[in-house]
Image (cartoon, rainbow, N blue to C red; front, side, top):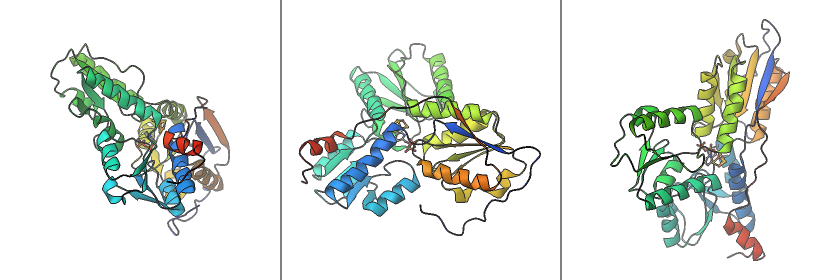
Length: 336
Ligand code: 2E6
Ligand code: F3S
């Protein structure tokens, strides 16, 4: 377990007025798409040897990326950084057809670790573009997933970044508009954006099914339940992890007196615990459970040893490996 040395003193056990406890949200941590993407890189390394290149962070977690780098993965921003003929994994957030084509032109062996639930949104974009809809894609401009989805139909997609943008977005035919979304948004904020869009465009069409994925929704429901009773919420997750950052916002909206995001236990500050009786803990969908356990163990040392799990859903979804790895396996693990 990598630690960033010398960044913090151990947390002190300072008495508060009453018993101390932790409310541990469940579900939290890895979703099915993240698990699949991380395993895909590991399997690619096993099968083809190092280096295996990965376009962008495989998932938005610094610990995951660091550990895979130690195993021989090389993370690049774009396919033109990869030597011709090498193996490249596309991240869980998905890629546009332009990226797929660029990789093919370099004769790279691409392994597509796009989460199947992101691929589902890509398919929706393709279908609505084919039917000549204007697609209002609710999501954060610049996020890899939004770039990938928008890239499926750039002439048909308009990005709506926030509820406020719903009030100003320009459409060419208000009777031919559909909304789709990034998978990791705040459910409440997205519904507010849709409400404001529909006020302006009553014939706005809904996506065929939820684009905000099950894991994002489940983690938000769980932290809402925790937050109402928490003096402090700690979310483990990286700064560029959309779903993790949303958990901090949701916790504050649902009554947590304070909420912070940390990559590692070392970042938990003593002053956050001043007068705190109940600490809520959760983690984003790209976060290994070991990082949460480190936070819990540090909190236990500070007197928060009583841990109550607050579970709002069971999750048992699993995705099969990317087809490129499955096919190779069928060929007896051929190295090409
Ligand atoms: C792929 C798609 C959605 O920033 P974001 O929350 O999208 O990404 P991660 O990597 O933190 O979470 C998993 C994920 C992967 N979510
Ligand atoms: Fe997929 Fe949702 Fe995870 S889109 S990668 S299941 S957060």
